[in-house]
Length: 257
Image 1: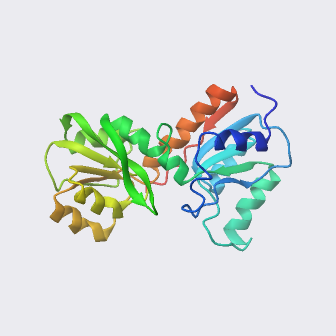
Image 2: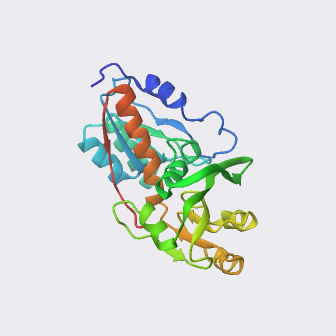
């Protein structure tokens, strides 16, 4: 176990492989340290998807000095330190826990990210960037070595056998190609249709794309915003354990959404 890791050193470590600076003009999330500690060394890092009070409480109970999340507390606009926001910030300060958040840089990372993980789970080959978002492609697309039915694809991306939010079998019975963007990226179904892909995997569906998929004959899986975004934080957790030899723990707080 490491006894020499400050939040500043961990910040440098995360920035050495996550493109936080490169997404500064694209991602409204405040990537990086969102709430710092008082300078004490970090001996354990907890990892979770959301910066919720339950996640904070469980991280504290696990003895973590830092919590690394995908969805942080700040999203491009100032918040009054009141209500739920105050309670969350106060808990972190009272328990001297550093909150570290990484949003789009974690979605996009070509090896450790949510979308790379989904592409690997699906067994995609010939992988290329996909999904233009404010000038950056944050997802991936590829082909299957053997055609895959939508039901088989669902099983491949399920975390702890949790069911998807929705399955929309509007295209071929066997899929030869697929694109993935985790989380709330239902609008990118249009890009999948334009590129002639068979299957699109994301976290959430939306009412306005239902008929787009139906008329475009695109199969779509809404795997769940939470479920499609456990993979990146868990990959970073393993990377930290391997590279830093520090204690780590994944805090699973599923939303069912």
